[in-house]
Amino acid sequence: MKTKEERELLRNKFNFFVENYTEGVEEIRKKIGIDSSGTLNSFRSPTLKQSISQPYIESFEKHYQIPTTIWEKKFPFNKEKINRTIERYRKELEQKSTIPTSSIYHNPFESIVSDKTKRKLLKILQGRWYVYIHKEESDDIWIVELNIDEWGIVTYPNNNGKGFVNIRPRSSYIEKTTALNETTVLIRFSNKNISYKIFYASVNTIDMGDGKPILNFAFFARKEYLEEEAKEILGSYKQSQLKLDLKFHQRVAKEHQY
Image (cartoon, rainbow, N blue to C red; front, side, top):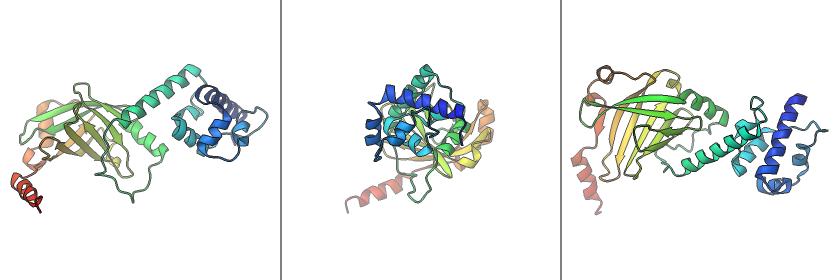
C-alpha cells in the first residue's frame, strides 16, 4: 500500500502527463485499449486511494513514449525535469530506430528481459569504456574509446559510428554501424562479466563491401592501458582472430550458380 504522499506524487505526475502529452483521459482509454475510463479518472481524484499500477505505467511507455522512470517515487515532481526526461527518452528511441538491427543473435526461445533487469544491467555498463582489439592479421592493436548512456546508446568520441546495447537474458551485444553503413560490428559479451572493470568480448566485423567477416576476441576495460600492456593481455592475433578463408569463400560463391 502506497502512502498518501506517494499517491499524491503519482497523481500530480499523472495530471501533468494528461494535460501536456494527451488529448485527455478518453483518448488514453482508447489508445491503451481499456473498456472504461473510470480507473484513469480515479488516478486524478484526491479523494480516492487508487494508485497507478505497473501495467498502466508500461502502457504509457508503449503508447506515449513516457519513460517508466518518471513514475518512480525517487523522481521528484518537477515539470522541467519531467519534460527534459521525456524529450531525451524520445530522442534516444528515435536514434535507436535508425540503427539497423540484426537477428543474428536473436533466440525466440529466450525469456524476455524485464525493464528492471535492463535498467540494472545498463546502469552497470553506463560510462566510459576502452576496447582493445587486434588489427587485421597483425599484433598491432586498435584502442577504441566508447561511452554508454543510461538508455543504451553507444557513442564513439573519436569515431563516426553509432551503436546500441541490446540486452538479452544471458549475454548482450552492441551493434555498431559506420556513418555510411559500410561496416557492421557486433560486440557480444556475457552479462555475468560486466560488473568487472575488465572483461572479454567477441567482435564480429562484417564489411558490406566484400562481405568477408572477421571474428576477433577483444577486451573491455575502464582503464586506459598503454598499448604494450594491452598487447600483453591480448597475446598474438593468431590465437584471437579468425578471418574468412578466401578459398572457402570462393567455394561457397561457386555454389551460388546451383
